[in-house]
Amino acid sequence: MTAEIAIMNKEGIAIAADSAVTMTVRDEQKIFTSANKLFSLSNHSPVGIMVYGNAIFMGVPWETIIKIYRSMLEKKKFDTLKEYADNFIAFLDKGNKLFPDSVQEKYLKSSVYGYFAYVRKEINDKVYLKIAEEKKITDETTEQIISEIIKKHYEDWEKTDNIPSIPKSYNEEVVNKYSEIIDKAIKEVFEKLPISKSHINQLKKIVSYLFSKFPEGVQKGDISGVVIAGFGEKEIFPSLVSFIIDGVVNNRLKYKTHITQKINFEIDASVVPFAQSEMVHTFMEGINPNFQNKMDGYLSEIFDKYPEIIVRSITKYDDNEKNQLKEEMKQESNKIFKSYQEHMQIVRRQDNVDPIIKVVSMLPKDELAAMAESLVNLTSFKRKVTMEMETVGGPIDVAIISKGDGFVWIKRKHYFSPELNPQFLSKYYK
Image 1: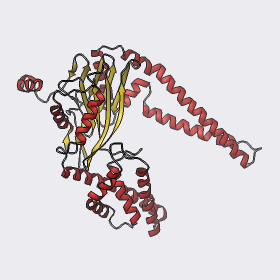
Image 2: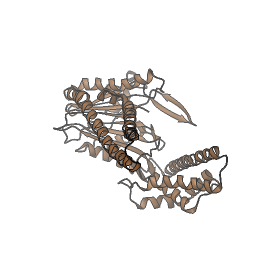
Image 3: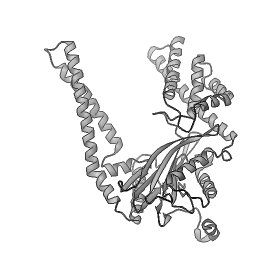
Image 4: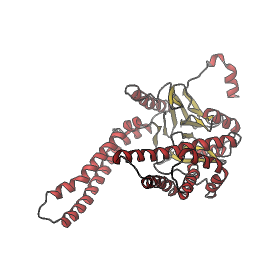
């Protein structure tokens, strides 16, 4: 994991990223604190890029992909930042030389086996639980469990539309093109489980959806985040666009736009954290978001149960009258709870967020950089003094992007000494 942030006002945009990266090999994890996650996207334009999540995309390090793109871009410029972002996505989408068919097939195979194994584990867990409860299980019950779980997974994917860049015909193309891999995966993962033909067809459709949809509540752990920030040639204020990027299968990139922010005459400043962002939210809003969610959940339970407790103590009503009164009280209770949440949100904004944003709007460029570094360091420090894994840490890279000065490094780590490598600097600036 990682911690990254972008802080913008009308002067420019500060971006900062830590250096920790978690590598997983055969279910064992190792954390390194020397990864590069922040880069200039162009040597000739005020545009930067940050990456988080998976440090490798389709078997290629993000650093390599970005520098290939930067070399290809050369002196080409765009009027808006969105055009830079769209051009980078198009480069990934059409980058078949970077991701040949063999690599795409390997990625699909890994994803399919991984998801099927997840479904199989869910089936096994439910079967074992049933056996533990009843000391035995019938074939009919096993088939019912399999049917319910596969159907639920299918419906979760089916109710979501393909992402805009992928046509509906793509799903059938994937199933047909990779049919041998899909059939083999179903046979090897589910083995001799009694799966009907209709559920086998649903599993095949799920495979195509894996590479064309982003359903709510279903997210793979190896996806990457990309943040592109800076100025277009005709823009006087900074902006940013971030994407969630999954992979390339059948020469189609699976991605979605995540966050867009833009400074203009109405919006003076913005603070946007990425990846592990709870400490930034705590700083901005005055309360840890995880604690806030738990508190809201507990209060919601209280507001939901309290009408029942009150109605239970009323003796002059019959059961029908009690049920009617309980429903009426629950509706009012929900309104009160919703009003409480809205009021607290207003308080957090007025007492915490707005004053900080007001000051951020006035910060000079060097103070923007200092604030960005401090907020990333705050997340790193929290990991260091708790029992959580130190998935944020190492040197913090910081850059400022402004209209006049372009992309300027404030802090940057090197794996080599710049003084000993003048040829690198001369080549870079050439």
